Amino acid sequence: MEKFTNAFKKPTIEFIGGFLMIAVFVAPFLIFASSRNDIYVDGSKSGVEDGSVSRPYHTISEALVHANDRSDVHVAKGTYEDNIEIPSGVKIFGTSADEVVIQAKSHRKVVVSMKSNTEINKVTIKDGHEGIWIKKNAKASIIDCVIKNNEKDGIKIESGSTKKNSAINITDSIIKDNGRSGIFSQKHRLVIMNNEITNNDSDGISMVAGSSAWIEKNTIKGNNGSGISATLDNSDIWTKSNTYRSNGHSGIEINAYGGTGRIDVNKSKFINNDKYAIARISRGNVSASIWNGLTSQKNNTFDQTKQGNISSILRIN
Image (cartoon, rainbow, N blue to C red; front, side):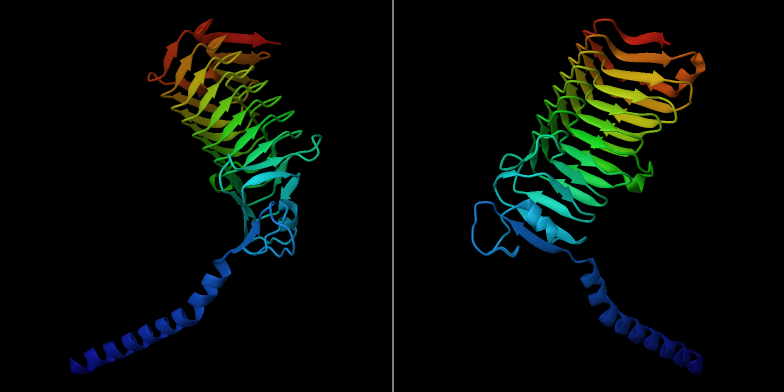
């Protein structure tokens, strides 16, 4: 019995020692590999610039020239006239959306283009052709920003994966007074939460067929089109706890071309929209059974809807 116990203890001690040795040599490498580097921008400064706290770059564009896929760009208070493209892996942080403004230098161009694994946080983006353009197959985050007064869409999203780990995240932002939709998205995975999407000249949110989305706790009001315009075909869209108020068409407009899909409307408020709370539009000769993919939960509330709560199936050829 003693021999068995000693034999058991010896490899256990060796294993622990080996594990500690691995930790000593591998852990610093992992920390180094995952670390990010900071670059600073301050447009009020002059003189030598190298991106450090004491010698910040004077423009965001210059900072992005020197950024890599592990760079965090910190932007000081000010208005920056620029049109920028955020390289893959780079994150931009302002002090607050009230204090940091990126205003289009060329009004015929996008103000901010975003590549994959990028983020922009606490910045106002305005006066461009589009406010933000998210490139094809990109994963990106827009957090606590104001996107306003752009000629076309506030945020335009090219097509990409509908998998959850490829989502475009738009949270805690104000998207207003844009010349077309607040958010326009090709087929992609979207998470849209806690935003104010108001007074855009077309729809608040517009999504094409095949979209996948989670849309929760947004105020969507005063848009000249519908609050949300979506296509049922091949889509998987879940909406919860949103308020749709005083939109020029319907609170939600759903188009169907004949393909099956799923759209769920849950715990939402529809107030004073000019047409329907929820409009169902069949584009062509579409089977009525397709509409089984739309679910309006009993916990939705409707108030002052001018033409009705949920429309009959409206056929447009």
